[in-house]
Image (tube, rainbow, N blue to C red):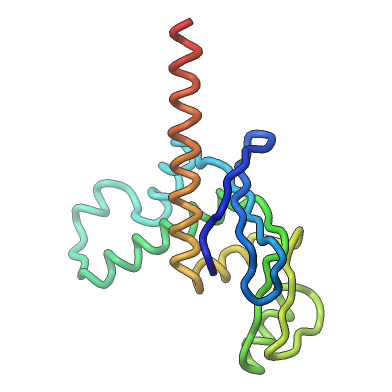
Length: 158
């Protein structure tokens, strides 16, 4: 998965796109910012309350896993839709799992475009499996939140 070549703002949501090296078609990802209250809700759901966090001894592996879970959940919130975004399963078991998620038969080693079909469960599975994509979405959503905050500050100064 490549990262954006161009950025374009549309209806409060920013669209990032690049050309897919396999098909030559542009792949677009529509992303929205994650509001602070939603970020706090996600962190609380993953880490628990402050008392529980301080009471537990966590290993480094557990801390990393929880961080990845927060990233995946925030990316799932921020991901609005895609265009020309395809998934491929290499194994029979993967194809069966994706068949359940997409609600249609899926063959191994075949690309399936998921545009407009991003259910909550599909988002969760894809973003858990592609942590770099989830991180990229979170980074872009954070940029958007910063831009919105700056615009609000500038409006207040008028």
